[in-house]
Image 1 (cartoon, one colour):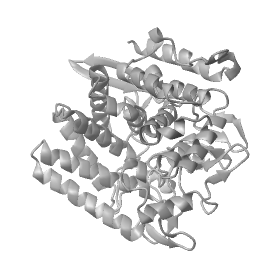
Image 2 (cartoon, rainbow, N blue to C red):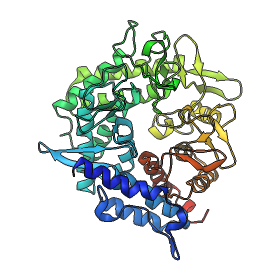
Image 3 (cartoon, one colour):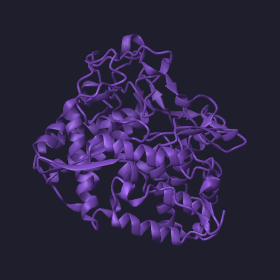
Image 4 (cartoon, rainbow, N blue to C red):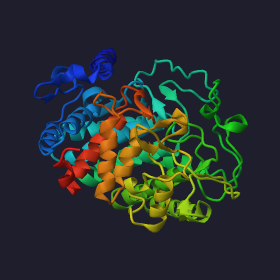
Length: 475
């Protein structure tokens, strides 16, 4: 599909639908789907369609079922550009209303479909194509977070004071960007057993990832990375001429930006460092089991152990009310920030990512803190309660945070509470948004945010699998 056609189709299909009032879609028999018509969908999976039909058929709440049908396939319907290039599958996945691909978002957007790829060859090829595309991106610039497919396209951030190569949309250094690429490749391999993805380019990219993490430990006090943006928003650039606040080299990895794309306060972003531990061990496993490279595998395992020990030593503190909890950011000198950002990785998402079990003491304590008034970004308003983000100010709650709360809960009542809030705050659109005002959900940001939509769908599938009784009653 030509790029211009791709954007035209997706923009018209979803952009227009998302801003129309919900009553325009109500029918005598219930709710009418807001999906693009079949011939205008970017990609279709027979297994995804079967799952939608099955799950929706088991849901008693019509509105919630309608939201699921709209949201779960939103990535496939509206953001996927799939083709073969030089005989290899290639998949470019835009984030939604921004015509660029984030390494983080693209992985997260397709993640809920991963359990289906063994049954669906076309879906499997699409995921394989995304791995190939992410490999190209990392080889282009491992410090960049977002990319264009059209290498001639000029970014709106071209004036950023950093190395802006052709094909780069934005060059914000975020640890999680590289972790997500590893997460996707590892999961694809684990499910399918297909090792063809681990070609020479992928192996080179794996070394770029490890080397970039090593460099950003900044043990010699230096980094090749700087970033400055001419902007009125202070969180768009790290302080100290684009290198961030001082750190004491303790084995942690510096991240100049959070998953929200906001600059960190202290460079050691703890959720992302924990995510890096997982990614490094996955790299080690691949190189042991399939690539017979024990030397590189040992480097990855030792690196993961070093970062994990540094997290335990420098990022855990005794809270006066909640016991031992994680800090969100630290600097190695003893300074810590206690908060969270409604994104992934976040402290809340550690159980979702597999770094902790929900019942692990330090995670459970941290989670209680995050859902309390002691967390400056946990908001309670007339519309809902939930985690926010400095990215959208002091008054906005993120649906993604509510979804993650439900994802990591062990209690039926809490999960139902989250579902009720999500149902009450989609502002009649049938889709998730980036954020909404705590007192008025009709005031929201981003009509078309595919990651949030698909994540909501993933939550419903998880509940359908693990706690189906919760969907058998109307909310």
